[in-house]
Length: 43
Image (tube, rainbow, N blue to C red; front, side):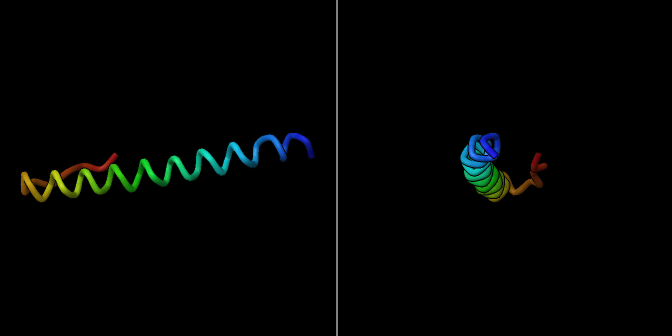
């Protein structure tokens, strides 16, 4: 039970950070693809 209380906030933080990072990467790839008008590979 103590492990869950320890990992849960960490999991939430990493999930929020990953969501912001992925959305930012997709947005930057979309903008760069619009500027270059070339298909971008999203990793």
